[in-house]
Image 1 (cartoon, rainbow, N blue to C red):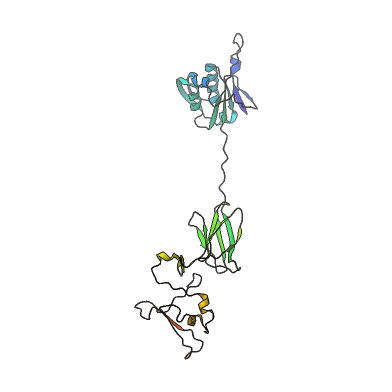
Image 2: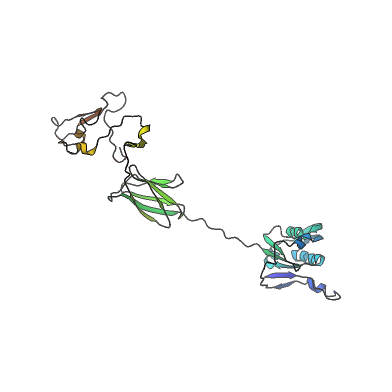
Length: 296
């Protein structure tokens, strides 16, 4: 709904008063390339006006009389505009209009037919933030065995979790574009894009590490060049065919600095006593620490 403020002139201009009458109608405007943001002629037009606490429609009527411009104004804009107090002397028409509608978001458009269109700015839709997505799943190895303790991290953040004893996990990600990084000692890391998925079943592949380059220790992985402690490797084939009843006894004589003493004679079935680098310690236990799959 628009209101039109126009100056109608006859030969004798006796009908001028009729041109200021308020007309309310529905106008279907087709804005073409001839309608620009600010026409050069509109910017150059100067006007003087002095009003106090008057409706905006009265101001537009006066501007029509003073400038010869016809005004087409959105009816909602007129209703929302408060009474106007304005004093301007030889001010640009565009500046006067901006002061009239300074409290509203409007577009003021001039065309080359001495017509000014005043309308509300189009509202740009605000894209709603994507809701967080809950992701659950399970992590296994190539043999289908569950992997507990696998790190599950949202890429680019410090937010993450670890898999439970059954290899299961649950995590909330910001959106469909989130990437989850799965990593575990001795396995290749894997990155997965969520893409609308809510259940992820991940299979991690073992990493073929060369012990000449990388040493897998109980507290992580290190380059051999940075390892300062003594590292001894015992191949599985070295203990596979030994006639012993426990894995501990199989280490006897294979690892320098490791002493293995069997108590089978006095206590049949008892595990052997193992000492690493001697038996003297001031504050620590002499018992070795066994770490299996990262768990002591």
